[in-house]
Structure formats: C-alpha cells, structure tokens
Amino acid sequence: MSNRIVPAILIVLLVVLHAQLWVGRGSLPDVSALQRKVDEQKAANARAQVAIDQLASEVADLKDGLGMVEEKARLELGMVKPNEILVQVAR
Image 1 (tube, rainbow, N blue to C red):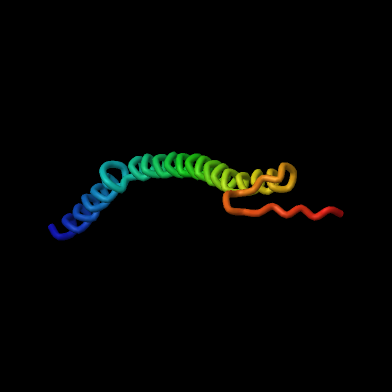
Image 2: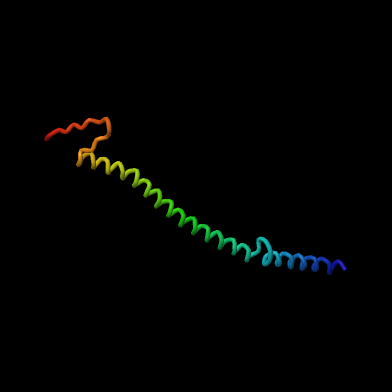
C-alpha cells in the first residue's frame, strides 16, 4: 500500500504546482499582464518626463530671456531702472 501512496502524493503535488504556474497570483499570465502594465507606465513616465523637461526649458528661457531683453534695452535703448543714473561714455 505504501508503494502506491508515495507516487500518488508526488503526482498530486506535481499537479498542484503545475496549476499554480498557470492559474492565480504569480502565474505566467498574471506576470505577463503585470509586465505589460509596467511597460505602459514606463512609457507614460517617459512622456511625462519629456513634458517636464520642455516646461523646465521654457521656465529657464523666460528667466534668462528677461535678463537678455533687459540687457539689450539698456545697451541699445538706454533703459534705466528707477533710482539709477545713466552715464554714457563717448568713444
């Protein structure tokens, strides 16, 4: 009788392990679906990072751009701020 019990237990154990491989949490289809979601999220993160980089570039341009506009206005148009004195030197 014990000669039949050990192989039967091993077969049942093999069937249970095989079933877990194909059904339920951690199964191959479940892992595949989760990997697909991870890939989609990575793509969404990459698109968001591009948008963030563009916005950061625009902010930097606005900050630096105003300084450049002010410098051009000072040099070419003689712009002065309140309480400043403009001194022009002839060359």
